[in-house]
Image 1 (cartoon, rainbow, N blue to C red):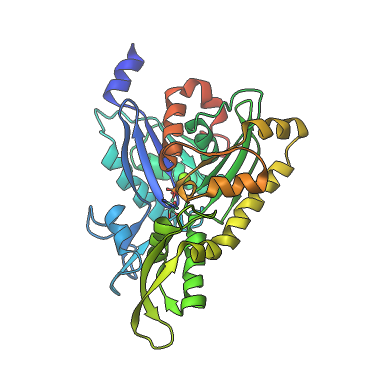
Image 2: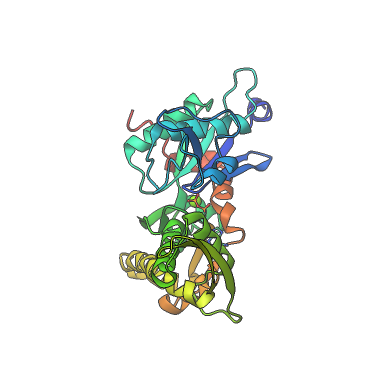
Length: 349
Ligand code: ADP
Ligand code: MG
């Protein structure tokens, strides 16, 4: 009874603290916030720009096109927290936007974080969340949240496998009996795909473009496998020889060629996880296959490419961009069941 009242007054909060996007879900309400993990700063200072404009969507628009007086940064760029203070500022902003604080009650918060995060970084996340108004804070591995969110039977004595491709990191994990049996995190993910397009345009078109433009090209015409109908798009950039702006038409075949190397790195990461797995579990995986989550899973033909290369069934989760947030929210709903397997920050106090 008391718990229900408390829940009503101060619902629990689930957060997907991603390198590219942060999502916040509130118990009973679903996802209430979904914004880029970007903070804008007054250059040369640690001052976050004027309230409300400095974090999230607006800050992302500033990436790559800020005047000299402003910088826009992603505090978790490579899956590690590159800047603790900024990470805290961002988390505080998102939490305060999402949480209604009432009568001094503080919500319980479960945060999904990249698997490769160090103990020091974990502590920073705990502290930031607490300072931002959270009560009890629990951290969970992003890959596990992805598995739960994708509806995998991760608690069964049968192996299931997930690959979450975010902005900064790709997390691959095989689960059995509610735990990660083998997991690996690599820095090759969406950002690397964008970088590969920037590089390709420079090499083959003598055109300098920014990573934001590259991301747009990737989303518009990018693919990992031949398309039934190949696509083209117009790209604007700076001619590296004449130094003047120019347009060019690129095809999806060309972009596929540009993405080949980073996609192979992701493939190899998945292969290495399968290789480390016990034979019985590998036998399960051959049946149950691989589920793709994270924004990177939306790349056209990625499932076909991986299926051809790995020889196991591959499917893209429903709404891959929100899988981790939904998995974290499910975990929060069944906190008593999951609590022991989460990191409550007590071990390293
Ligand atoms: P993170 O968990 O690290 O915050 P997300 O799961 O939110 O990352 O995914 C962000 C990444 O997904 C970005 O690199 C973005 O470019 C990429 N992405 C989003 N939509 C698409 C799409 N349709 N095709 C390919 N990549 C996409
Ligand atoms: Mg993610």
